[in-house]
Image 1 (tube, rainbow, N blue to C red):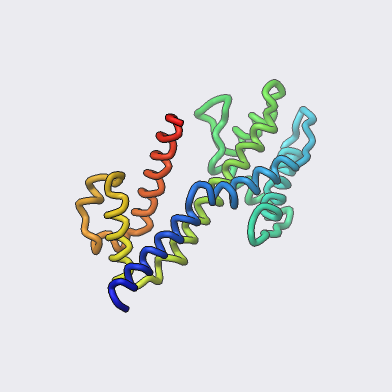
Image 2: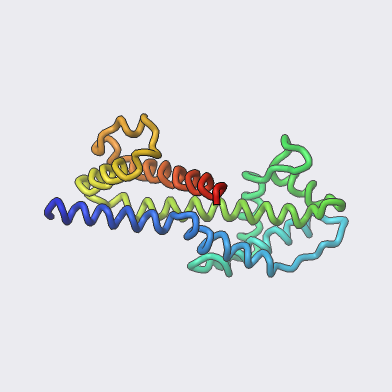
Length: 208
């Protein structure tokens, strides 16, 4: 492979990875479908709320999201959806009533709040947690399928191109590295570039 062909290949790979990890892509393909399923979800708002009723509601929402918002579809049994929903809440839920409270117990306590539409709030937080997990898994899958099998020379070319193109937005700790030093850390370099791009876009939007 000539150097020009190798460089073109590296440029195309960078372009492809950035396109399918871009914020707009993630919104259209992950965030939006999940939000649309949530908007259609019907649930019993009756209070007081029992643990059984709460668990059924959160697991049914998760089951529908996995079935109708994910591609490919993930068909879950009731018990699988229950286990997944409870694991997500236990790991990531943070109470709005007390910042120190988290996990399932905090979620149930918030859902039982009759004054602030507690159950709807908890469901919306579950949706955000699912979105966060889905985004993370998508990006990790892209890195695993696009980067792990690339030859060393292409990796070095990709690092060289990214260092040159995004130089104004990269920290000195990265700029001081050579392409060969960054070849095994392309996913980390792309993460920095994506974060920098989002910051630049947010800053620019304030002047529009």
